[in-house]
Image (cartoon, rainbow, N blue to C red):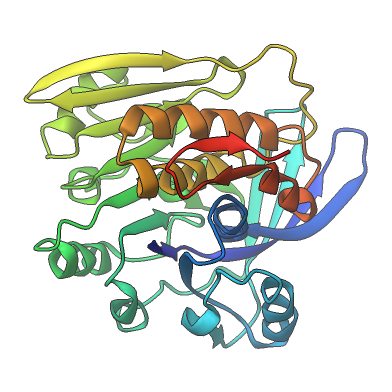
Length: 312
């Protein structure tokens, strides 16, 4: 199986409520390394993103431990790698500040990595690719019916002069969410996507009318909801998480969710199994302190018999 992963990488600085700090890779790194742990060594993951030249060698050395990651799509950029400061008021609520945002990833860097089984686009910064680039990707893979999974993530966030991120509607959201296999967003992102309505059910009807048949709303400790459009009939499915989970850090849970969905879907082509597994591994991620512990996700592995199980 082959999958391309597109989105900005970050250097995360997590500021905990108790005043302590945790630093590590963030952004697309969560999705990328999660996929590497879920998939088999003979699968191939093609990350496409840029990183500051001074950080390039350390990242490549870090990723060299994963035999299923092809690093040829990672390129050096001028300037600094995007640094994100996450100030947590509690386990779930935070203020985000970004510095040194990278330029959008150009289509010319992506086009060589589109002959794959699936494409994961995670709008880590909200400026990871332009709408024109997304259109070019759609056109390039349309005839082959290659599924595109889009995590809305920071697409609904603007950025102030001091780097603070703030919620704002996306005027051309319909073009962003047109003809995708699935789109993922959390409750806040869904509420802030459109100026037309804050009603979630109305938004789902609008999205599915764009030939995007699967909409996933993640809800933190409440789990997630899948809205599935089959022959113009929308069905709603709720997935819960265990109340026994002890939350350590929710940073990256959505990124792990997206990776879990794509990993499962690559082998099963089953939307419901994919959402169920994504919900499970995202919950497990919440028990991890930082991206430095992502290899614990290797406990969850896809077997070649298409069955997802926990390793002994």
